[in-house]
Image 1: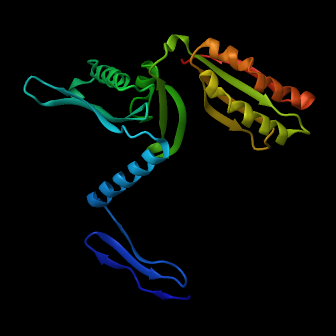
Image 2: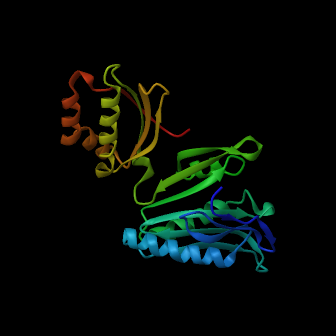
Image 3: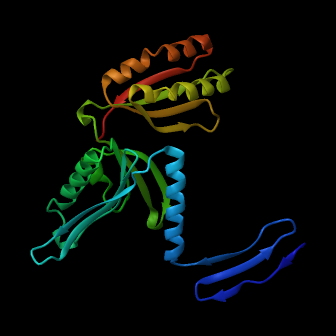
Length: 259
């Protein structure tokens, strides 16, 4: 081993290791628990970086509080708005006040405030043992699942538009088969075509591919049927498909709804 190495030493804040590798930077790496000063600094630095990269500097917290006659806390919601987007970090209702509609009222209040701030969409996450069905009933669509939660549970990620009528949303599942001798060309074609969705109010929610790379499944959402129709007629999409000729992927499209 080259360079100097010191063993880890215990501190009240956690474990600390100092190391200077040959030709590398000198410094100390410390692993610990809660660090309010570090969290505040990271928040400032990342906010400044994000604002500079996106031009959006309107980050703000969002909260909804429910209190009883004596001022006791019955429930609450904490989230954020930034750059035309909103998110819910936490939503909680006290056990003896559940099933009284407070969760839905808080969620609707947060959505309305997000709209007032100019937000066009909202996202959140929920463990399978919490309330994924509750969010689906309020118009949220699954955008992904995270496995490996303790107890055999999973994490669900949700998204909802705030400016469109959910009744007009078109949701599709596309089953794509690539030609055996043009798999890579077909995949590149899908890359380019899926990138066109945004100009028509479309959104790719999931993209899955088989192990051999010859088939894909896409879950796609359009804000309205007119967007779906304009996507199908997009001249760039048509030209890309014509360019592949007989090597173009064969696609079966199914229109689906939440159940």
